[in-house]
Length: 224
Image (tube, rainbow, N blue to C red):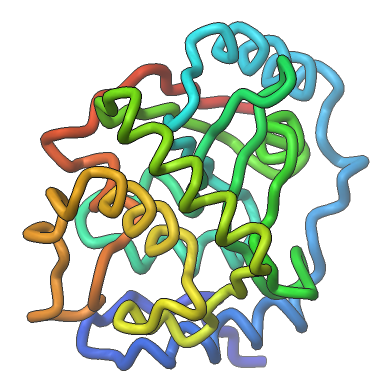
């Protein structure tokens, strides 16, 4: 029987709608990795390092993760330069806990609305093999503006954009949500980094952490 590669090499000439097809096909047809297959030692390792990293987090930081499933592999292939991470969100300290706001769709979030969840859920050791925390320098007023923007999107139930259309604001994909929220708080200072001249349009996950204004706070890579 003829076999095929799960993912063909990414071609930047493909239309953005290709990802909609790719996500739909693999999210629906390929089984998720059994959570029971993950060794307890690995789970403890991830959780321990995450708890240590939490002490470094400030509200407004950006967190990235790399998922271990096929949909995450498809997401990584959309990155412009670096394929270290497949997903991202914004961190806020609320009531002495750290929460992540992130745009997510598919089988992971059927209602497609912006997700708010504890950082421990976002960095579930049964589903990731790395995470990174990065920071844009925000003054107090910019941080307030960022929180207002994110809170408004969450209250309005901002939906995930399966078509990855950067030019629409009523729905957003993960890196678009993070970038546009930060850019608004920074009075449009990041606008020159938007790429509408080539595919992938808009911003990719690595566009955010490779930006010269973005500083690495902590990066952890795990091997089972």
